[in-house]
Image (cartoon, rainbow, N blue to C red; front, top):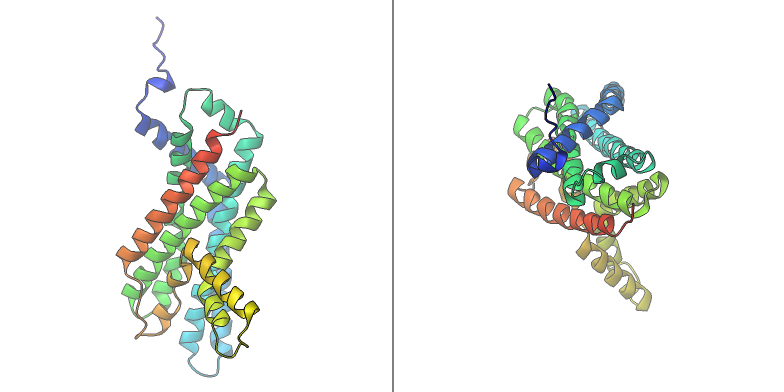
Length: 268
């Protein structure tokens, strides 16, 4: 007796998006990125103990500052490489062409990919926040740090998906993602330096200040996310979760729309 075959196009769009998200999570798990993150966190934790022993004063603050800043940068790097490597492999192995041949909207494919990696980012944040919960006396500060770090990772994921659809090459996309993250993290400091009163007034300094302000207008203020000062300084004013979420929603939506536009204009 023959069984009826359910065509992918007959499934609800939400079901197909969730299926892509599940496939993305499985591929990320098979890439051993979680194990690499756990290994990185353990190494950084051991190094933070060494930093604590070497600090002459305020050893606890030195350990927490080193642990938070290093694990944050490491998680961003590992997640970006995971997103880029998995997406580039799908391009080169014709997996994307196979999915699109099943009458799958390109927007649904990209949304599913982002959803899967966004869920992976939640696991990343849980792993890097665990040692901080053991070393920081105020758990609420760690929770604020973890939530904003999760939003930060979501922005990096969206930009990585945009870069991989634009370039389809791992090295070029990785270079742009790294430059984007470092610039978004340091743009406030660049603005302060360009507007410093110690600089000689002139056409060059004015142009540099205007250029820094123009770049700051289009970049997310990632320097306000997951600040180490929240963990080591009791008087540091943390960014509100609502403000961080709104900024993340705006930039993620813009980046995904740009990635969808670039994906739609590609011919497979």
